[in-house]
Image 1: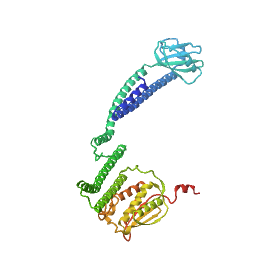
Image 2: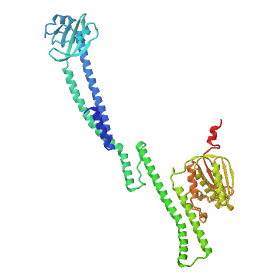
Image 3: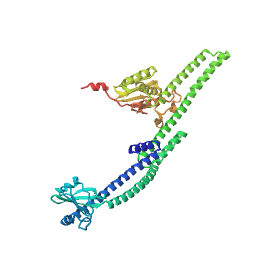
Image 4: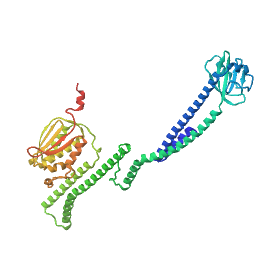
Length: 463
């Protein structure tokens, strides 16, 4: 199998296996490649060094040799001489004479040494076919001398080195596989804990499950984020349950009243005993009022139950115009509102903000003698003040909670959702709202919204 096919198989296997298997495989392959590369480089370095040492020994032997003796005795085949190996003289006409085993010349390469001072290195063979390393140097003008050494020692050494390095590679691959498995088990243990926690939550819907967080690495951050997510989901579910429970409690009273009144009307019709016209009219008025209270309560619940992104599109608008519209609606309901408004432009939902301002004014008019309310708008700071009795300090932190009602106001109309809707609408616009006791008596609600004194389209046109 070629390298491309092997890579394809490895990639396919890594994609099919588990994360631990893929990590182990990738670590094994990476370490194996590194070891194989180191082994190949070591083999090449060793071969180069052995060849270099052999070349040096040949050149040294040539420099220490008795050239004239060689020339006198070059035809005495096999006679002893000063050369430690095989020596051959090469002449420009291509003829040779040798002492010892003749070297098969390569005239094209070796003839360079006729006029070259540097040695010429090459691999060659004797006339008997034995592999040798050949070095050719200039002996005298027009004559070159070749000497060779057999390659058997180098080849045997390289074969042993190849076997040793191959064994090292095999052991390295096995060690890499073991190390990869160990590393993957240690590294993925937090991931395994996270996986088991997710599976447990999916199976039991137990959002109170938490993962122990150790360290500050990516896995620890992932575990912390998961814990934060489950805590947020648990809080959201708890708020949903509380909303349903509170809504059921608030709906029970008007529904019971409606059922009682309707039962009275049905009984009078079924028994033929008509109710007094005045009593019947009061009964019907009460039924209508209960239906109105139910409609308001359902609308408030829908307003609070929608998601954070489930709101009207935000656009730039004049907040002072929104406040003016809310004041007009409050006056139609009987409130005595005095205003002092300055221009202020915000980015938000007109309907949502108008309802929030109207709820603040209605809440103030409910507790103020004669429904007198003061509304001021200065630089994005809206204040709505009444002249009622105010609130005990211990009750102020709870005024924006859903269905919370002051004990002194439980006999008054309302569901306890008005100020919660105010807080939600203001938060969607990026502002804040608070309620406190005003100096000199009464309560004052403060709504702070980010914005500008002039519309952005007008500021773009200014020089």
